[in-house]
Image (cartoon, rainbow, N blue to C red):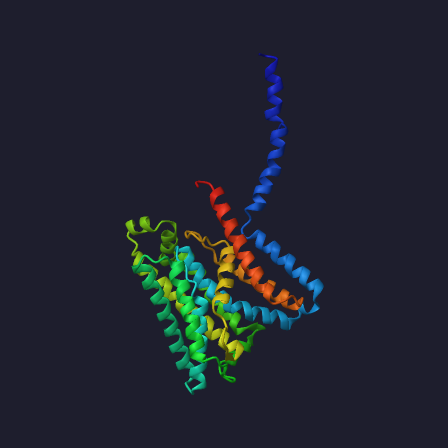
Length: 340
């Protein structure tokens, strides 16, 4: 017995083979849990590869173009982040933006003043979001089904509003879509403000905390005194007004409305950005910072495909593939998280 004690002690005191392996394991685990580390690495790799293959990628004109493109998606993604955190889903935001864009173009072309058009379009978009909220809240229709049907309906409405024609608005709203402040596009300033306000709401307000509680367990949220129905209506109305804002931003950037602008494809890009940014499809967890990285990554990938002259149809493949992979990764992480 006394001979065995010295041989066992050094293994514990000096750190035997099993203990010497522990730091490398903990380091690996630490790297895997760096917030948004994977997105950042992929973004850097895509940027470096594209810059080496296409000199135009790093030009100021191209970078400003990327910022303008991602700003519209960022506004939609901001509203979607808050809504999904609360356990909701709205697949019609891109289509809502399309209707707003088309109605706004027709009204401006008809002689309406720009401020009046902005107010009317935002009110219309909010009403569309509120209708979605009423359907989801007071019926048993799943948010996915209800808002997907709404998206198809709104895409058809957008086509009817334009009657198959393109409508231009001249230089109306062009300053918002094309001008800059301190070298930063106005569209990006608007997107940053929306994202910042969303982040502050989620982190520091009762409304944000209620969204997390509803996404975690809606039944428990009701028992804790949260007016879940009212919160849902507010969230869907907010998603609607942000979709309308995105539609007006897109109209100001393009200077025209055309059939099949925005719509479900824009929505798919926003959903992909939100999901790969770390917001849970099941609710209860959301991050605006992750959404920003997701939006920028998908915008850079789309820009890279264009600069490298890859067939534009592959953009759909890439976006859909990223969304599928991100959904699988989120589910794996959820199952492997402590307490599951």
